[in-house]
Image (cartoon, rainbow, N blue to C red; front, side):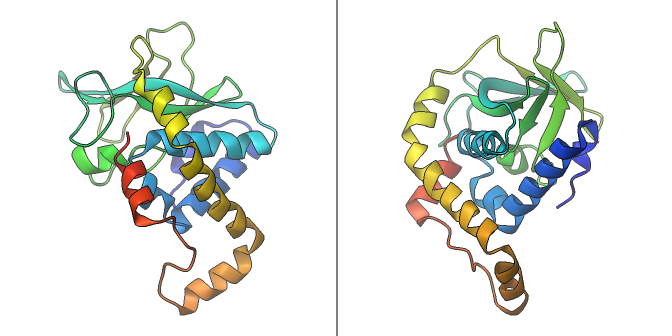
Amino acid sequence: MNTAFLHVVKEPDLARDLSRIADDFDILGFFHHFGSSCFAMSAMLAQILSAKGYQARVQACYGEIWKDNGVFYIGYQGFAHEGQKEGHAVCIVNEQYLVDFGLGTLKKHYDPNFESALVCELADGAEHIAHTQLDNGADMLWRTDWISPMVELELQSQELGIQRILAVYQDFQKNRVAYLVKKMFAAPPLMPIPDAPLVLRLATAA
């Protein structure tokens, strides 16, 4: 996976861990299956990073992409796509970085080549909590002046599913070499993904 998005992370250990997690999520198909579920992806990332000793938490928000005086909303009130819930969620790490692994909706409705993950430093005293400039020249901002009540509800309702997916991730950590060797000689998927209804529900939740 292209991890150029990590260039803003100044701490080598954190950059290495985020790169490894992103690669693992990519190998396991998490970005493909769950990339549109920002709630689940942020919750999983927060739990993984917390287990590694980082301060990590889920932050409810919404996103904006500004280009040529036009705006594309991510999770804002009244702008949820069909079958999705209002609201967006990201992972805040060490109260310094915003990490967004839940950008699958943008691949579907904004740009099929959009990054699967983004990281940027938290803004200091700004109207938004974070900002980055995208490769196409657009500005992406994450805001918290409106927070959907659905975020907390979805995090609670998805907890069991999130733990099941994390179990797949943890099993992969124990059997990484064996999995990668098998992947060279067999058609995917070798690592079991939770049942289809769970995949569908999580994938349409954000």
